[in-house]
Structure formats: C-alpha cells, structure tokens
Image (cartoon, rainbow, N blue to C red):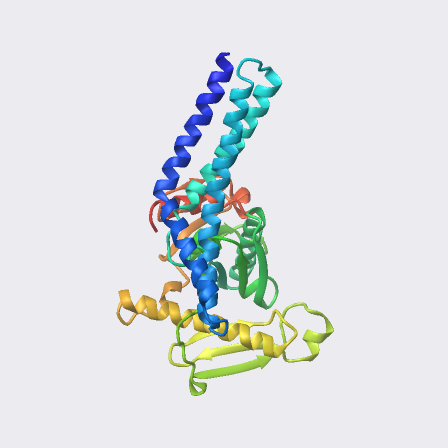
Length: 364
C-alpha cells in the first residue's frame, strides 16, 4: 500500500509542476489566441501570402506548446486513474510500469521546461552557422574542419537535419570557410551563444618538434527567418560572382559554374552558396541569406549605433576567443561562464550541451 501511495504522490507532484507550467507559459491565454488566429486564417484573403505565412507560423508555434502541455496533462490523468484503479490490488510489475511511465513524463517535462528559456524573437527558428578559419594557416583550416564535424555531430545527437550550403576547402587539408544550415525547432535558440572565436591548442601534428600550436576559427550563427519586411536590394550594391564548386560534387560541379558568391558592397557582407546544381537556386539561397544578414544588421543598429553586423565575428586571433580547447591537457574552458570540461574528445564528438546550457542560463 505504501508503494502505491508513493506513486500517487509522485504523480500529483508532476501534476503540480504541469499546473505551474500552464501559468508560466500563459497556456490559457495561448488557447484564446489560437482560436483568434484560426478565425483570421479562415477569413483572410487567400492571395495575401505574407499574412497567411505569418499567421500560420504563429498558429503552429502556439499549437506546439499547447499540444505538448495538453498531452502531459492527459497522460498523467490516465496514470492517476490507473493508480486509483489498482489501489487495492497492486503488484510489483504494475508498480514498476507506472514508475517508468512517470519517469518518462517527468524527463520530457524537464526538457520542455528548459526549452522555455528560448524566449528570443527567433529562438524557435532554424539557423545558419558560418565557420571561418582564422590565424594559424593550415592548422587553423584543420581546426575549422574539426569544428564543422563537432557541430554536425551535435545536430545529429539532437535529431536536427543539416545541409552544407557552402564549403571552401583548404589548400592541403581542412576548410577555409563553410556555411551549414541546421534544421529543427529551437536550432537558433540552442546555438546563438556559440557565435565567437574558438581557440585550439595542441602539438603540431605535422611537425617533429612537438611544439604547441595555437589555431583560431570563428563561428557566426544567425536565424533562418521569413522576412515580412521590405529589404530592398539595389543591383548596383551587389557584386555577384559565379564559379565552379571547390568541394566534391561529381562531374556536374567540376564542369559548370553553379556556385554563387554575392558581396553587398555598402556593408561588405559576403554570402555564398553551392549546395545545388542549379545556379539559379544557389542565387536565390544566397540572396535569402543576404537579406537575413541585412535585417539582423538593421536590428543591431537600433541598439548599437554605427556597429557593423560583421563586427560580431571579431578579429580571429588572440584575446577575443570565447572558448579554449587544449588537447594536450584534455581541457576545454569557456571564457565567459568559466565552465571547464576535462574530456576534449567527448566535446569534439558533439557533446556541447553543458557549455550551451551554461551560457543560456547566464543570459548571454
């Protein structure tokens, strides 16, 4: 009987947590908003594409939170009913099954509760990640390729999809720069604090002197957003180059100039795309990225006068790094939060969540 009471108390504790979440997430207000948006969608002009896209995105975002909390509530109510049903005729097998179900709900609830930290305007969105090799020559290019593998692996662990938009290979090995798109809910929210300089310290693998070598690479993360604003691009402000892809891609890439590079001359912002065999599609993708970066620049100017968006990338060398990866000492230290992890390979294999969560909780 005491085991059943323990399970029942556990279930009611989870129920209290759900009730608190309903208040903190404005659950009931969101349900009202959902009904209003649904009416607007039914009444809106089918030819007003931008309005429909905006309303649909809001509708889906509200549905996501409401559905998850509603599912938690329904599952828990069923379990509580089951506990009461077997209150006087329990056995250990039933008790263990109930406990497992409650643990699953509790763990999912903790994840959902953590996700509420993603309160930024675009935290929900997919994102782009630019990685660029800095000072350190071939070693920096090798380090940039290591960072690429680390973030691709991180995305895989989170069940996010990835797409390499652009890649420029190094002369001998590694990469000079790469842009990847990470697709999944809260992708930008998760990765936005990873923007900055990443510093690697290790023995030079191609030298017999065994001297320590320091390399730098920069990371720049920005959201993939639908812009319901008028970003006007003047042809005279754009320098558009087409060229053959430098990465592997079969005979087609080697024979045709399908890769596209667009430079916005007034701001010096450069975007590149080569992931499609179609030059037209690559140009559309590059223009989309450029508009997002220009939009981010305008938002930035509202807070910091005359500051260029690309200044976020900082100078890729000493003194500006956000994190150090010291291979020989098996130490990774985040310079902003002070968090240290003494397992470099574990982190390089995509296990970044401790660093990311620490920076998010610190409000960076």
